[in-house]
View (cartoon, rainbow, N blue to C red):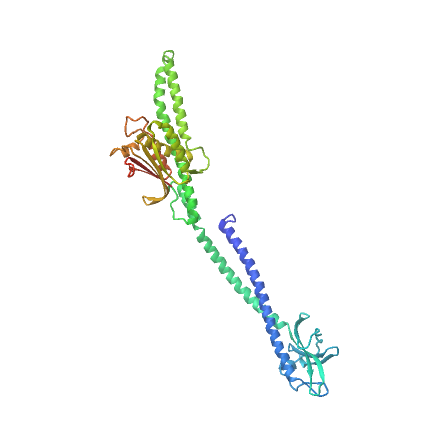
Amino acid sequence: MSAKSLSFRLLVSEGLVLIAFFALVTLVLEQSFRESAEQALQERLQIHVYALLSSVDLNNSGQLKMPASLPEPRFTHPGSGLYAFIQQPKKGLVWRSPSAIGLDMLEPPKLKAGKSAFLLENHKRYALHYDVVWKNIAGIQREYVFTVAEDAQFVTDQVQRFRTTLRYWLLIIGMVLVFIQFSLLRWSLKPLRIIAQDLEAIEQGKKTHLDGQYPIELQGLAGNLNVFINHERAHLERYRNTLADLAHSLKTPLAILQGCTESFSDNKDTVQEQISRMNKIVEYQLQRAAAKGGHNAIKSVDLADVIKKIRLSLTKVYIDKSIIFDIAVPDQCQIYCEEGDVYEIIGNLMDNACKWCHKAVKVSILLNQRKARRDFPVMLQIEDDGPGIPVGKFNEILKRGVRADENIHGHGIGVSVVAELIGLLGGKLEGGESAVLGGMRWSVYLP
């Protein structure tokens, strides 16, 4: 796995987080277990203190009377790890258990009667000091401090065993989690690998667009990439068509010029006329080639704003017809497309509607429409109350140079250019009869 891989970076970052988390968990659990073990030891030492108190007696002369046998056998074995001391404040040691022979006396802290203190003495022994005021039958009162201590090694061994077991299992759990994370990363990033494979297939010509079943989070990316691919394909197709049209358009003027070369002086006006015509042809075709607006990144275009601007222009062009426009569009309708393509599509269709209508033109936008088993975010509908297209003419007018009525002024390329643009953008153009106005209806489905 490469260090530049996204999977590698995610796995390393999550691994570091796991290490930090497990280290913190280990410290917290070890500290909690140590405190729990110390609490258990304190309770056990408290029981030993109570056992000593129950077995010791204060005689009539005020002296402690120790029993013949101690309640805990470990008190009688030297080095057993459990020790007992009885002291009088300001007087010193009164008694020690046989197990504490040779050990330094543990100095108790200042305590009030009935209070106890649990301490770790010199990091070697845990000791519980309990202060008691004892009064016998004769009325003699004495204050004693009972101390029971146990080696810290017992708690240390418990904590060490717990630490070893904890780290062993945390290591196993950590390895399992890393494996699970790796598997989840592979599964989670699989859609990105699929998109990369699909893009490679598009580059090799095996596919025309991204058509996989991608997650919701990547559908926007796939859609934008498809728009970009269609945009570049439309650019290429536009340049090819423009070059073909340019070459075809220049054939006639060149033939005329060739015929004028033999007597140039007699045909000066003709030569000048043909040169001017060629200049206009070149300028027109170059403008068409640049209609998509250079190589800038595709930006969003507001369809509603474009429709309103075109309507304003057409109102001035067809002022003599007093056309009634019914514009049923939302306040904003953003799509990703070249602005020049949008103006050419909508402008041609609305211009045709105005050219053929009697008095009314309706432009509407419907969102999230389904057509031909595909979902289209936007459907643009342009209708008029004109005569419509004659039966059998619809497929013909989509061809270059063919007009529905030869008596109407035009070049017969408007609808064909619209159809080409919509097809290159991945949309769909549909024509039919308007159910509202009775004339022609054009439906443009845009991706």
